[in-house]
Every structure is written in structure tokens, then in C-alpha cells.
Length: 407
Ligand code: ZN
Ligand code: ZN
Image 1: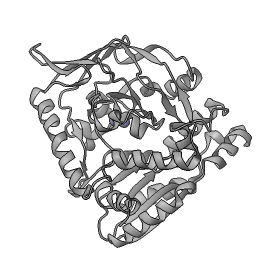
Image 2: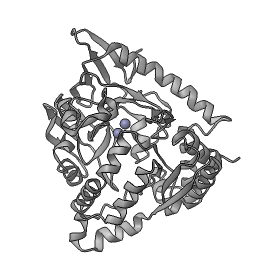
Image 3: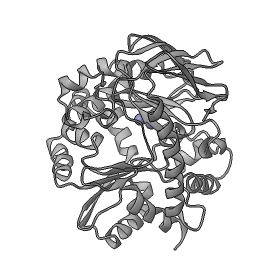
């Protein structure tokens, strides 16, 4: 079995942990067709009932964004909603290959993209809620494309860039040793040590400080739960929603974020780069922000809805970690977020609070759980980041020192 086959098998068996007779919905860029077909073969070998291919072509999307009638960006086709809801309701697994060109959409009006995202998210609320509550197993992974690889490894031939990106991806997903499945089990054990530390201390808030100027307090709601590595679906089997994953994460209180935070890496949002950005929060809400590049895109993101101006995720990743140590800026959140401590603007995972999955919208809000049409991670970790946990009695415990866990 070559490494590409090993990787496909890992996504099917560990990523979505496909069950016998389950339907797999596989979304893939057309450039990644070879890998998507390999994955379909592995899925049938694992007992898939059917593999449903959903091909994505971002060049066609780009043509639509630049040429189509302005009114269509507020609509989302009913057949497409039925596609997602229909498969979600049959307990299908959703595997998405993410490989967007970080520069492709730079000439597109960010308003069109944010309106389209909003229409999509609104139409797909049922599907999104099922996914974010782990009612459907899902996994997001990446495969190189020429356009993406050229951005990550400029100045070499297309072929050299693509193979360098493959090498990097194999390292991050642990397909660089004999037994990737076992490597993932060991990785999970290491994450479990961090989860145990965080649960044991039951911090009521975390205080972030670093030389970039970050000085932020993040309150954690009572009953918050930390996760890392695998998730469990209600049927009782594990899956890994992001491959790679190095983070442990929970939710902040939607009204409990105060101070200023500086991003430590650029953010590729819908094919637009946002760089040198920062936010100031008051009672959980962004009250001021700036960016050296992509300000308009950032503004559109924040203006999506009220929840887009609040945090929905707090994630801890050591500065000294496998992806970070590669020293590669991937321009792809899946990798960059796993190289750095990060937050997400927007919707929180209801699984991150006790009994959250069964709560109504109002109950979630009352418990401090943020809701939004978006969920966008941005990176804040640095070599000098200090995070101090505060417990209910006011006692302070070092969580991060010099960018790494202090356990
Ligand atoms: Zn995260
Ligand atoms: Zn996230």
C-alpha cells in the first residue's frame, strides 16, 4: 500500500470511522479527483453502502462570483439544501477535502462572498446543527493542488511544490511511519493528558499575554468541556473531525471576553488573505479591530451577524508541536490552526458544554454559548505566549509559559 492509499484508508477508518452500510458523502475539489477515487475505494472496502461524490470547482465559483447577477448571492438552491439535509437525516458520514487556492478570490467583492455564505449557512442550518452536535460523523482533510502548493512553496517548479506539500501533509497526519493508525492512538493518549489537566483544574477564566500586544481575559462558562483528538457520536463510536489535529478546545462564555488580541498568522478566509489583524473585545463583543491587509473581508466577516463579533472556540496548541515545527505557513486553516493557539469567531460547538446538544437555542444562549452563521478560526499563539488559568477561588495556575503547555 503506498502512502496515498494509506492516507485514504486513515481518513476512512480513523477520520470518519465509516460504519458498515453507512453512506459516505465525499466533497472534493476536481483537482484532487485521483485521491478522492482512492478514498471511495477504501470506503467501499470498509463496507460503505454508497459513496456520493460532490465535486467542487473553485474556478467555476470564481467565474460565478465575478460574472453572475448580483441577486443570486442571497439565494441558495433548494435542491442543494435537500441534498445535505437528506443525507444528514440518513446518518451519512461527511468527508470534505479542503484545498483552496489562497489567492483565487482576491478580485471578488467580499460582500458577494459573505452574502453567499450567509445564504448557504441559513439554508443549511439543520445540516450544520447536526454536524456541530456530532449527530453526523464528519472529517475535514486536505490534499495538495498546484495553486495551493505554489503559494506554500514559491519559487520552485509546480511538481516540486506539490510533492513538498504532500510530504508536509503526510508528516502532519502521521502517514510517515509504518503504522499510522497506531500513531493516532498514541497521539490521542498524549492529548488526553492535557484534557485531564484542564478538567481537573476547572478554570473559570484564562488570561493571555504576549509580546505582540495580546492582553486578553477569556471567561469559560460553568460546565464547559474540553475536547481533543477524537469526538464521539451519539451511536458511541469515535471519529476525528479534523485531520490533522493537535488542539484541545472548549468554548468561551459569549459575554466573557475582554481585552485585545493580535493574530499571529494570516488568515485565508474564502480565498482572501487577511493579515496583521487584531480585535478589542468588551463583554464578549468586538468593539474595535484592524488589519494591514484584507480589512474589508474582515469587516464583512464580522458583520455577518451579532455572533460573528463574539468568540465560539478557545483552542490550545503548543508552539513546539509537530505542525508548528515544520515551519511552514500553509495558508489553510486546517493546518495553521493546528500549529498555534487559536480562537474562533462565531458559532460554538454545543458539545463543549454539559447537556449542550439537547438544549434549545434560548437555553444555549442563557448558558453563554455563542451562535452565528459563521465559525472562523484565527491564530494567536506565539513563542512567548503566556496563559494563566484562574480557578473559582481566585487561585492562579500557569497553563502556558513561553508558548508551550506548563504541565
Ligand atoms: Zn480549533
Ligand atoms: Zn474551529
